[in-house]
Length: 259
Image (tube, rainbow, N blue to C red; front, side, top):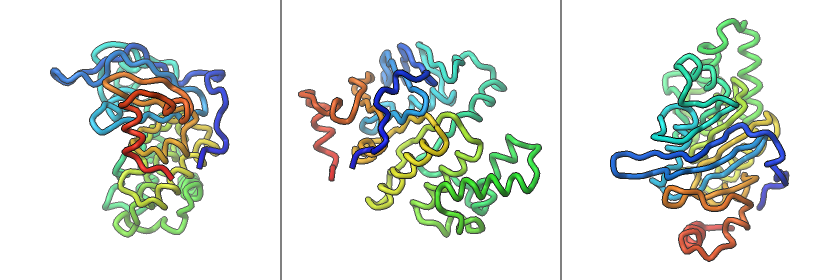
């Protein structure tokens, strides 16, 4: 199954993230070696790679959680490494971060989890406005019935959906998904892939999707690239990236199970 509404020419739209000559090392371990990447408005860009190749490091640098050694990362026109803490916090309101483990607060109900970003960032909202925001994002992820449940009562797929809903409640311009289908059964993976596409359509988000799941890449990506030895190979459609004689790419394809 391919993405049905794939953007034909995303590069004709404005850039929301521009990365140039990005380098990051941890001691003698060089993770990112002069990386270049662009993310365009309302595009889903998939970054593939094995564990430990630097995919998660990349999105931590984009969101200002890690500092690069050299190179530039511009997000929504701002050079992230140059921002003061207050400016960084303001930028992060526009960036939704969907963590691999959903990162829900176990002691809070679903409603309280979803309200938490509003309480921190939209202090002037009335109870009615907060209720509306919570109900709207729950509707977007088709889990309105879970509003008073605790995270421990939810399945893994439901927790992942609620995590995405909590990210959406501030209506971010950019979504960063870190291994969105990790640890989920095949049917739930398909549901999450569908949700990622629905979020793009409904909220007009631009997204970077970090994954090693080729089914996820095929179903969600407008463009795809792979992080290999600290560099990106070509950026293109699923077919363009995997129509290659590069053994590293071919072995990655063969390792994954594609329907």
